[in-house]
Image (cartoon, rainbow, N blue to C red; front, side, top):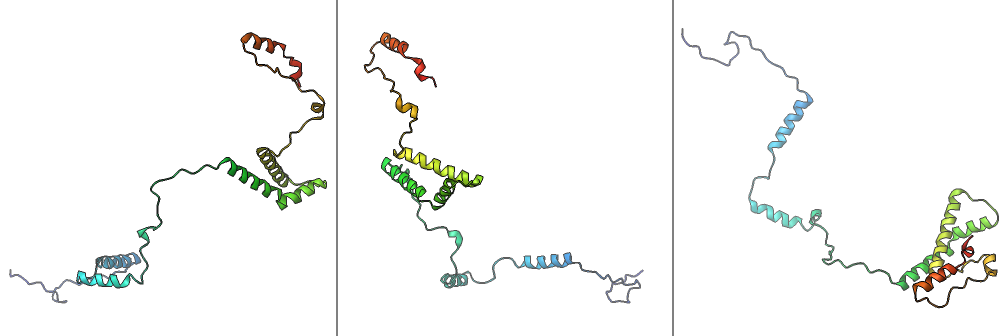
Amino acid sequence: MSRKKKSRKPGSNPEPVVAVTRNRSQADVDGRLRKRLKKRKGQKSGSRHSEGKEVKQGTGSAKLDPRLGSKKKIPLIVEPKKKPTKVERRLSAEQELEMLENDAQLNVLLDRIESGENLGAGLQKYVDEKLDRIEKLMNQLGLMEPEYDEEEMFEEPVSAPSKKASSDDELLSQFEDVDMDQFKG
């Protein structure tokens, strides 16, 4: 038998031609688009010298790269923070006390309390905190007068031994002579 040459012409082959029609889904279309874009990666073809001229022209008007960093100077030696002196602390305490005494809201709330009005829990807490802070500052600045009970004012102060004891025996005798009833409440 002689050899038959294959031909692509329809009808030359006695076999029926089956045409496959394909429905393209969205995934196929997206895949083809990604494949086409992937092929176009990289720089445009051309001379490497031509790109340098474009960059020089574009830097004047274009924004600088934000990745370059800050121009703020960073100290290489960290100096310890200076602690405020006693005078500076006293001045700051005086300023805070002045601010609290001139606080308009606190003054209004104190006037309401003096007139016999009951404040809510939140306002009462606010007043208590501010008054406690004022008391602490006055104690710190030495402006607070010591409070005496009426009983203490009429009692004679307890006299402490005036001379220093030099030996253990003298100290023991002083301890035994102390009247413990004075310290009971």
